[in-house]
Image (tube, rainbow, N blue to C red; front, top):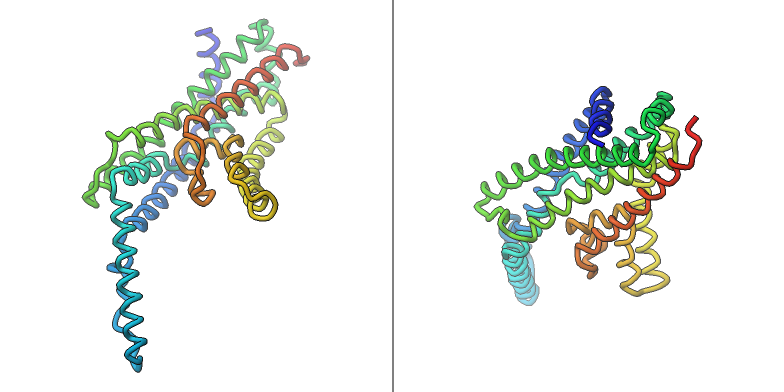
Length: 308
């Protein structure tokens, strides 16, 4: 098995696509990090103080002036309460978790595409026959590819997470805030994000086995992941608002792999408008089930399919 894994790693290293995808992932991670930091800044900023309303308009009656001043006091109190809540340790940890997992959406897509290439390159370059003749036990070959894809996911996670944590720690330090690295909420998000990266690599292998065409597999996977994710959110929201006005409709989003990935790091609740969702580990369980199903199907198909 070690020999097979080394062989697969060599195949990956001798192609250009893995590091091109990694560079793209770094760009998206940097962009997402900047967006997440700006969102956090917005949540922690007292808008009453940052954007003063100024003096009341001229020519107001005494009653209108009194109402204006009352509205200003109410707004000031609301902002003070919101900012105080945002600065609480638990909320800061949630902000940190979001920042430390920056770039997950496109990072997972790129890891999945790398995994797809690991399997479809065999068919594209017509090396599958030689590979399976050298190792007749096809299950071992697929297992080696799954492990190799998983290692690629780990590499992407390490690099993107390092960038996100360094950027996040620098931001929190500059703002005089705790970085929450010692808080389990942030730690859990980072660790579960590692699991998610590995599982999406497994998804890629499964998709590559089901769709042997390299172009077909990559385009199908990319469209299902990107367009399908937002389409699922829109459809579930419309059903909840217009047809079945029950919370379980939105909660069912956890069963959709890309949304389950977002839920694992705490981002799905915000996307769905703050609805109560199952614990984060439930999203991880959903992803594991999907990975097991796709991995098993892929292995069984490869064992039975005529490769020639």
